[in-house]
Image (cartoon, rainbow, N blue to C red):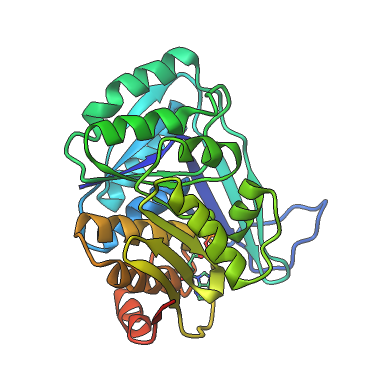
Length: 309
Ligand SMILES: Nc1ncnc2c1ncn2[C@@H]1O[C@H](COP(=O)(O)OP(=O)(O)OP(=O)(O)O)[C@@H](O)[C@H]1O
Ligand SMILES: [Mg+2]
């Protein structure tokens, strides 16, 4: 079982437009697709597609919160959310032939100190039957920047594995609790160390710095270039084949989902990297976020190059 944590969940609304957008006029939406959103929920969908059991956790509230749970029911994903007083946010992605994708992201409601405490008290029970926990994205307003630090400590005390995928202060603080794996992308590494990454040697150097803190698996994702893994067994580069990209949103979440499955199944690091690169790249071929065609993943997997550096 894999628990995926999403503290700032949303109802994601994809508006498919057929005409060109004209600002300041009335636009009719050709088709609407609503989904349970937030990075951790993308991870949950990918875990399920990979054939592992998953449970979604975090905060939901109000009518949107109820709706989000019903969308997860329809997806066949189990959940154990903390119900809060605020209303779960909505995020709108307008997809049109002219601009491509334009996103409007609500900030989300506040979580009170009492709600945070209640969640942290229930957290050990929520992850009781999970081998791996994933923590993704940022936290809602009102919560401490050390929330992930606290959660990682709880997961580790129970002897479970934990993957952290976040940025900025959340990443910096979270690293102090030594998660099992982190998956920053290039921007997140640059922000973390306050530097510019200019070469593969730079990427390796910073990944090693994180590994040396005591984090067993450090994955740096590099978009179309694939990903780099630093672990006890060595340094590996995973390169996907060139593909006709449709939508790269959620590629990082797909990679986290695949690595969670790989950790649950105790795969060898090089096999885990190949699997995760194939799943994440297959997600780029799908217009929906956090999904992939298993046949395409298998095809890509045959052409993923794993190089030991
Ligand atoms: N253009 C692409 N072509 C092929 N594979 C891709 C492409 N973009 C992303 N991927 C795959 O997805 C993985 C993760 O992508 P990326 O580094 O963009 O994550 P990210 O920046 O964390 O994404 P997000 O947070 O938006 O989900 C890559 O390692 C690669 O396997
Ligand atoms: Mg990411």
